[in-house]
Image (cartoon, rainbow, N blue to C red; front, side):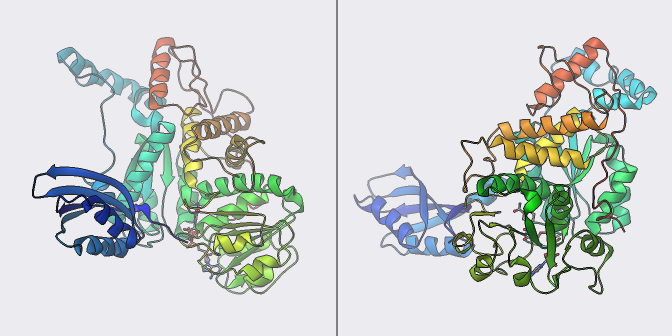
Length: 522
Ligand SMILES: NC(=O)c1ccc[n+]([C@@H]2O[C@H](COP(=O)([O-])OP(=O)(O)OC[C@H]3O[C@@H](n4cnc5c(N)ncnc54)[C@H](O)[C@@H]3O)[C@@H](O)[C@H]2O)c1
């Protein structure tokens, strides 16, 4: 079912005879080899020759080679050079630092740097909270990884993880105006990671943990949350859980079922599965049955680690044992964050009427979505070439926009639930259908709605008082808080702070105790 896409796109520089049929011959050769032409640019033309940049999407690196060979085999045609357009995008990295202040003359230098900056340093030394007003801390997040669970690639190390972290930083900026910076650590030692993040924390308003393998990710997040006075969020866990819970809210609207009546099977109890189960429990489903590589998770199962034991204790009310196939029989919802091709169409056929199937293993889902559609009413995957893509980009930019705007010190379950509902509710009732349960990642209402929801939950946690959050009236009369606008808004809020001399009154929001409070604890 795969189709050629921009992830494998090449540009071939081709020399060809200047015949009337040359363009048709070239594009036909690409088409016969299964490629999809995306651009045809003549870069040189003489009476004897034409040179063309021919761009095409392929299925894989090998397929790109086959397309190139097919073009090169045409009579009189020579492929001079092939550029991989994905690699071209990465030349020199994807993000940069730019100055927000003018540095044109001695006056500018004296204010932005010495001697003027010394007074700002002194102000922060006297009142460390001023770092949130007077430095990048206000709008900056560290994207921290040890490179041990990168995409589907596994433990590829910190340098190889950098392109993913750069991409994440670019998405933070694009979708929520958050300045994020990759911090790829050359250690997999839990204590070293915790200590290192603690040491760099003064610069940041939040920590986004990324692609750190389970179960170490649970310990690292828990301990950092205890030690730091800024929010710590593991996107592979909570970003996924937020989007899944939001998507499920809409899927159940489509099939007209209440979550309280639903039996849910979650396949995979790693980073994503753990967090999904934790957040789902707050929605009070009829039951959740967790399944991992060793089968159904139940309290009698030997050899479970503390995470799994906590999941077993909080799920599986009927004490089921056995296989995934046995777990899904009669279930209303299947959520897979496990492994490819482990669920069959026949298994889905045994589910309850109007079943919902989220097959999220990447790049190949637990079941071919076309097969799942034969028996389920709503199907979602993690893939961009299929409707209902469960994509963390729907959550993390808005979540951090909200956390930074609220100057939150921690993350509560209420914030995660509020973010999930906000994503779901961006889809209007007249837009909702089985193929549209989540909004587009390019819908700019999403990050704004999620940020507002997180700020609202933060305020609620602080009892409605202006302790953990602060609504900043900007100099254009607007409100910076809860908006997912550009970093300019944070800048305007900075200027408004200076104008009205407001400080940072920050209290600690109380944590809402979840039903599975200790699922990530020992
Ligand atoms: N937005 C998304 O679409 C999204 C988000 C997060 C994770 N994922 C995907 O979910 C999968 C899991 O991610 P993770 O970070 O939680 O990984 P992880 O390694 O932390 O956990 C994997 C879990 O799957 C279980 N598992 C492995 N093989 C299984 C099998 N044959 N049957 C049942 N369970 C099996 C393991 O026991 C483990 O509990 C990956 O494919 C990942 O790409 C998708």
